[in-house]
Length: 286
Image (cartoon, rainbow, N blue to C red):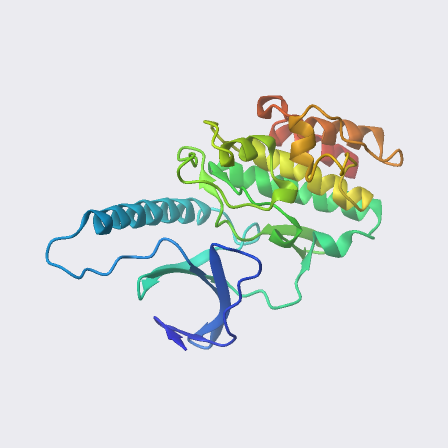
């Protein structure tokens, strides 16, 4: 199937996402990861005078385009060793598409390193922290951090992290509101993101990534999420929102426990800054 200048190689998959589907496609003999956004869809004009519904859908499309283009422009300022860039953003038959580097079907992620030695895990966490600091330095929030969005590669005889899939991401200067909503994995959702999804007037910023980082760090080090009353709460954010203390393994280093607990605080302002996280992890690696 031809989509613009791309020819699909593998059929579309949804991968448990309700807002997009993706496939592998080729252009000029190079493979790409091609994502189709299911919404918004550009309206078809059937009369000379646009209806109110058509005008509303046009405005939604224009806002969507503006957000995506500004987000991708900022991310383009970052080196490819840190993130997987969107190389093309276009419209075909009313649908929006984003094409990015195809990494293959078996790339390594944080999940791969659950059984690695502590030093290797600390190196990964430091690389992750530095990567996230660079992203936040461009004013970008990833907003959907989870193991499959953290690619691990061997670069210059060391393990390095690259982030992929910024399609829930946003600029801190253009945060999502109640109307625009959010699409993120509930396992790593921050308390404030849940409040926004629930209709509360909350301003989101980079600290929601810090909360997800805390959960991912603990999961990598301990092999599972922190403990909480699963009969009462479905996810960590719910326990934190309710004031319940997450249970940590006694085998976890005291310094790491202290850092991760700070990252998992209910109030975003009380979570540590990126440079603090980097400094603490750097000292542990050395």
